[in-house]
Image (cartoon, rainbow, N blue to C red; front, side, top):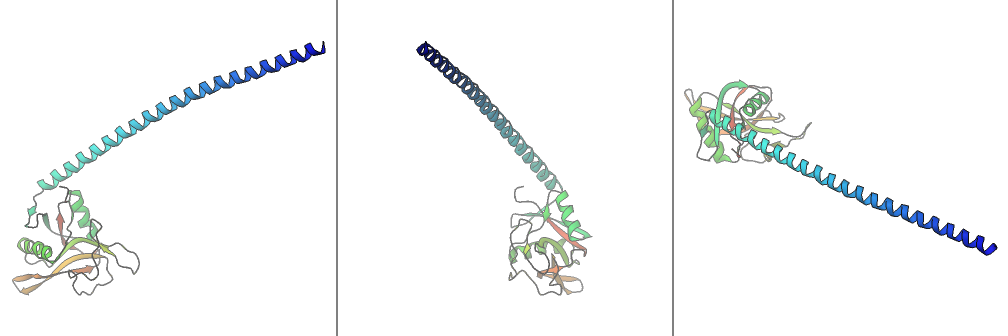
Length: 213
């Protein structure tokens, strides 16, 4: 009798173990199915995000193309350096001039070297021979007393650049081209240099067509 009781207890224990393993197997099956569905859902979301990013990129490309078309319609002057400019005979602060250029799909002009500076000034002299100052895109990117002048595309305008002239506004943050009259009725654009000026001062300004256009 005692042996029977022990055998019955053993069978019950074995049945209990088998049932637990069956439950674990079923739970594992359900987990695997859920994990598979989760992977499928993740892939679906990823694909949708990818499509959304592609559509966003296409939209940005279309907007950029439209800005370029609008900018070209505005009447630009193509110079021998391969760049197109517009010369604005309206006194504006640097920020206002920059905003106007951007609204037209342009940006304030960037001057790379002395040759380009003279080329731009030669054309500016044709537009208005009595205007001495033109805003360009260079601006101080630093704060406080530090100086780190950069062009619109982020490239640095070095402090020892030959483009700089010796001016009276060494601590100002915005940059414009300044050149001098050689006589009452003419001026020498070849004397043009870059000078720091208060950003709130008003000057004529030069816009440039972005390189991607």
